Image 1 (cartoon, rainbow, N blue to C red):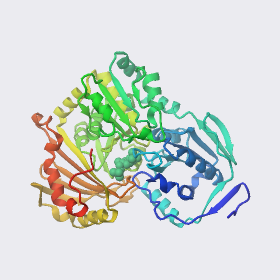
Image 2: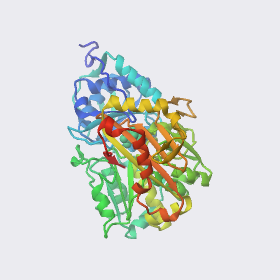
Image 3: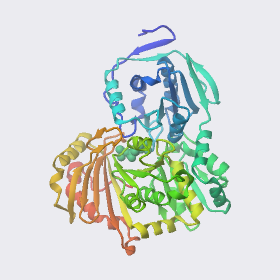
Amino acid sequence: MTLLADPFTEIAVKPFPDQKPGTSGLRKKVARFQEPHYIETFVQAIFDTVPALKGGRLVLGGDGRYLNAEALQIILRMAAANGVRDILIGRDGILSTPAASHLIRLRGADAGIILSASHNPGGPGGDFGIKLNMENGGPASETVTRRLFERTRSLTSYKTLHHSDLDLSCPGQVKIGPARVEIVDPVADYADLMATQFDFEAIRRYAASGAGVVFDAMNAVTGPYAKEIFEQRLGFPEGTVWNGEPLTDFGGCHPDPTPVHAKALLEFMTSSDGPAFGAASDGDGDRNLVFGRGGPVSPSDSLALLTEHAHLVPAFRNGLTGVARSMPTSSAVDRVAEALELSVHETPTGWKFFGNLLDAGLVGLCGEESAGTGGAHIREKDGLWAVLFWLNILAVTGQTVEALLKAHWSRFGRTFYVRHDYEDLDQSLAQETIDHLAASVKRYAGVSLGGLQVKTADVFEYQDPVAGEVSKNQGLRFQFRNSERLILRLSGTGTSGATLRIYMERHETAAKTFGAPVATVLAPLRRAYKDLLALEDLFGRSKPDAVV
Ligand code: G16
């Protein structure tokens, strides 16, 4: 049904019931996004929820996964029809999530739309996603995503215009209807920003010394960024970047930088001729995992160690005010912050909760157990930034990853940490189970679980100290008498059934324990959650699907 004059069109639609953004945007199977008008309905709700885009500037890009190309053309037409004045888009529609965040800030955009399902698999049978970032470069707050969801439920039409697909292969300017489209080099601005954050001279000397470094881009978006930064600007040899060509299906691999999915890197790092340092990033370039010759560094330890050594990198030449971590992230960084007299903010899972803290200057470094680390340079977690941070520390201290970790544990103790994921569980049963536990959680104080005495038990609730927004039901916390902690929550990023995440940690100060296997040290906590939840009876599961 055409309601407006040509070339503008307004198409009538029925709302979709399932367009509620999760931890990080709307994520679904590709097939769901391919249903007629599914993308359009969500995107129209974005334009209706962010009025500044009318007559304003939009940053648009994605991680290059399957469906990106088609979705970008749909959004370009809709942006023009919704009165967006100008659109900045990466060449071929490519922008890593950190590069998009930077571009929003650099060019004063009113919002950004990033097409990615992050570390989830791609290809026709994989996942797709749409994220909305605001003018500070960060993910939309809960208030905005709530409004966005409400809008998806009441929409009756979307606006678009008749226009052929734009050729996005060359930087330059084109028009689509009344809107100006600027196709930008996706890498250059971001690489320039990195040079302001770290001591590139020191890293260049480190590279020239022959220090072995590999970076696995996992056939995802960071390949071109990593090649430019590591191999061109820092002088690491060609071949330092593995899997550096972004592929729409990530070469059939799962672009998640965990030891399971970055298996070849793990094997190389722990082989007799392995290099000194290795790292990997995810589908859209915001996650990181770093490896020394002894294996991976847990993201929680990485955050703690980077905080300890932040004074060594130019990004923190003016000092660090405070740090923030998501609640399930281990408390390792808290001990460093205490020693350095920094404030620590404990937020719900989701990078969006760090935005206000960073904007207000309350924190300068943030991290999550889910392989996310970032600073105040943008408002997203940033995989390559974290890797460069590590390289900067290695270069100026002349130490290995193992030596740095050992010294870190000697000073602060080791916080053993693991996460167990139970995936694809029956959605309503999983929700009911968590709700039931939440309702009675307080009565676990004083109870013994897995032979450990519960000290306190509660449901985590967060009040944003800047905006005052309250976020309830952000996970169940069990604190035990001897530093052990157990957290349970449902993931907000899965696309099939429910994923139950169970996080366990225990702090040890005796050096003789530091080399003990994580599974052994945390075995009592594993017993504790088995006492708490009848996983086998309820879901028929005797062991986790993933151990991270
Ligand atoms: C997103 C969020 C992160 C969060 C992670 C896991 O990361 O940005 O803040 O920690 O999901 O969330 P959940 O435990 O709810 O699955 P990404 O890299 O997937 O966008």
